[in-house]
Amino acid sequence: MAFLERVNAIGEVIVIGGGPAGAVCSERLARAGVRVTLLDDHLAWEKPCGGGLTQRALRAYPFLLDGPHPKKIVREVEFAAGTGPETSGRARFTLDQPLVIYSRRVLNGLLLERAERAGCRVVQARATAVATDSARLRVLAGQAAFTADFLVLAAGARNRLLPPAAAGEPPPALGPEDFEQTLGYYVPGQSDVLKIKFLPRFRGYLWSFPRPDHLSVGICGKLEENASATLRRRLEEFLDEEGLSGRGACFFSHLLPSPRPETLLRRPLLGRNWALAGDAAALVDSITGEGIFYAMRSGELLGECLAGGQPQAYPRRLREEFGAELERAAALAPRFFAGNFAGRPVTTRTIEFARSSALFRRLLGNLFNGAQDYRTLARRLWAQLPLSLAEISWHSLAGR
Ligand SMILES: Cc1cc2nc3c(=O)[nH]c(=O)nc-3n(C[C@H](O)[C@H](O)[C@H](O)COP(=O)(O)OP(=O)(O)OC[C@H]3O[C@@H](n4cnc5c(N)ncnc54)[C@H](O)[C@@H]3O)c2cc1C
Image (tube, rainbow, N blue to C red; front, side, top):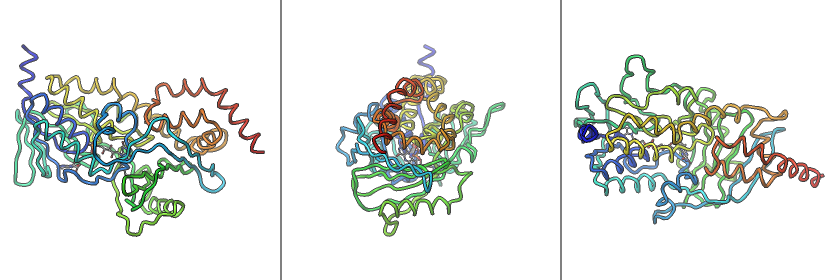
């Protein structure tokens, strides 16, 4: 009976944000019979993004691979590292299982359609203020006001709508140390190869992700460590190397959460009548920048917990499922991007090893496409070390 009372208590939910987190949460709630209103200022739009979906996402949401919407299925990848004396060349190889790349307009559109079909009311409106201190919370969007029992804040990395911190709790807002700046272009053209390039001791990377009718080409780097002009210059150099031009291409810039471990551990995800999902909760892999899967899955978990009358279960379920994995990524990120191994940057060594060892290439591919987690990474690295070293020695001897 107590369970039923709690279900009744959350009969109506407002979701701010119609990206992957908000759309999936709304769909899950609407399917369970909860009344949901989703507010988004743009609805289906080309949110700055690579649009890459890993095996992790495709296994959890097979419609992203099987559905009819336009997408690019990619198996060929190329990793490169370095500049000048720290250049380690390129490692190109075929992934065991593909990645799928969407334009975000298409991806957001299809997820919003699913939410709407499940019964969610989708409203194009920009929320300007939230008040969560009375029994029915209130959201203002221009002249309109919406009220509900519970607020899901899934408004992405840049939103400023967070409810105030409760006494004794850290504030839910992220610090500048928890972000990367991203810049990029949507370049007309086609390719079958996804490319990633690391720069020595640079916390971030350059990418070129092919989509059905254009490429998303960009750079991400720690917000506090990089001036936009420096990132832009590095991006232009990368475009030149790739034989691409920013002329006629559409420029974008956005923030990408890149949380520190302590942020993931301490930041509250849930208040009395509100919860955070997706980028608003900084649920992004600090090494790869993957956030779409974590946005969708956090939205789904939150929807399940709310529909079951158990909002308090959300932080625990999220941590059990992938929060601890994101904390591992956050702890490893500084060592991966800025550390040294045998006298050279770890990223340079990674590409050198990938060039010489098929086993190492496979591991890198699995890590990148979400088939290898960080929890078991060290064990796998050690287990295959003798064979990888034999391959690397053989490769260097054969190259002499
Ligand atoms: C350049 C770049 C490249 C990336 N590449 C990848 C990639 O290849 N693969 C990957 O997995 N992840 C990638 N990410 C991360 C990924 O884009 C995000 O993790 C993901 O979009 C998070 O989804 P979300 O629903 O939490 O937020 P968002 O997708 O940001 O959605 C939030 C929505 O809320 C709306 N909104 C914001 N404020 C308000 C308001 N006040 N009122 C109403 N609506 C509001 C916004 O318009 C938006 O539609 C990338 C990120 C960046 C910046």
